[in-house]
Amino acid sequence: MSQKLKILLEQSNFDDLLSKIKDLTKISDTIKIKIDNDSIFMYAMIGSESIVLAFKSYEIPTKDYLLIKEELTHTINIIITSAKRFVKNMSFIKKDHKIEMMIIHKAENDNNSEARSVQIKNDKFKLNIETGETSEIKEITKEQLNKRLDLKNKNWSFRIKNSDFNDIKSLSTINSDDTRRILNINIEDYKVFISETNLWEIEIDYITEENKQLSINKKFLSSINDGGKDIDAHVFETFILIKDDESQLMISFEQDFTQ
Image (cartoon, rainbow, N blue to C red; front, side, top):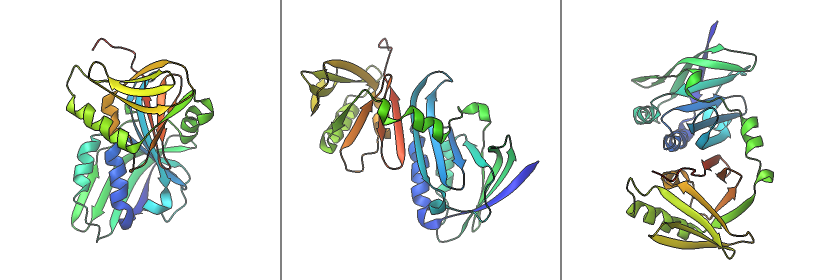
C-alpha cells in the first residue's frame, strides 16, 4: 500500500541542497536520493552493473535540509530522471515562502520504500517531479560505499595544490576537443606530473612511490570540489578517489586509448 510523506524543505539551506544536486548532474542526468532519519545520501554514476566509470555522492544531515515531523521507518528512495531539467525547474522556487514536498511511496522491503511520485508546492508554484524506476540506477548503500572507499585499502596518494589545479583545469579547457580527452598522471623519479600528451605538463607533488603511469578522462575535472583548498587524491587499484567532508568522487582509470 502506498503512503504519503509530507516534508518541508529548509529555506535557508535550499540553495545549498540544489547546488549539490546540480553538481551531481555533471556526472549523470539520473540521480538517486536516499532519505533516512539521519542523513540524505544522494549520488550519480556512469557505468554498468559490473563497471563504474565515475561515481559521485553527497551525504548531508537530514535535519539541516528537511523538516520531517514523523519518524521514518524506511529509507525513502527517490530516483530523479532528467535531473538537469529538474534543477532548472527548481530555480523558480521562492525562498521567502515555505517549500512543501509530498512524496507518495511504497515499501519494497523492510528497509526501503520507493517514491512513486513527488510534488513540490511553493507559493503559487507547483512542480511534479519525474521519478524513475529502480532499474535506472544501481542501488548503492552508504555502508557499501564506505567499505569500498575505505582509505585503508588505497595504494598511494598525492596532493594537488589549488593553484596547480586551477592551471590544470584551464589548460584542459584550452586544449579540449574530441581527440583530446585524456589526462596522464605519471610518477618519474618520485615526482608526480599531470599532463596531456605532447602538449603540456605540470609537476604537482613529490612522493615516495616508484615510477607509475595512469590516465583518466579529463571531463571529470569539473566534478572535483576544491573550495579554494589543496586536493588530496587517493589511488586505489582501478580508480582515484577524491573526498571531502560531504562528498566522495570516484574516477576510474582509462583502459581504452583508441578514441
